[in-house]
Length: 114
Image 1 (cartoon, rainbow, N blue to C red):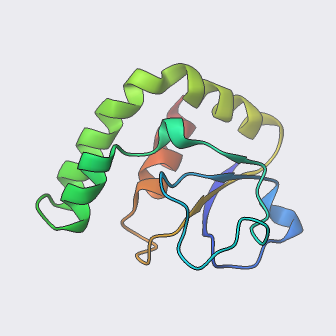
Image 2 (image 1 turned 120 degrees about the horizontal axis):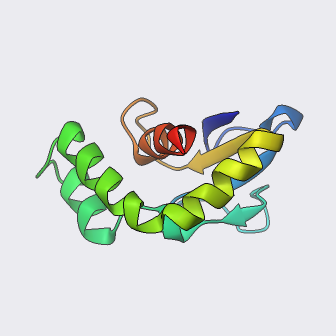
């Protein structure tokens, strides 16, 4: 099982293996205060793609398509995470305010398909 959760939400036992999937460390969170098992920068959107989406240069549909193309280059890393999710819950941690249209949701869908 793969789920998504904002880094600002409280960790709980059902989270399982917690992976931070933001390229930048989340604002206002001390590294010692965040409960996470790994920080996987390899599966995060590129800086250019992230900036284009946040500046509304591209819409979410275009962002998703471009991000999925980039993820195909990281299939081995994605498979590693998908394999973990076969044995335990994996929670993808993200800092974005929008809980519906963000890279963690796209990543979770992509990982489920591996």
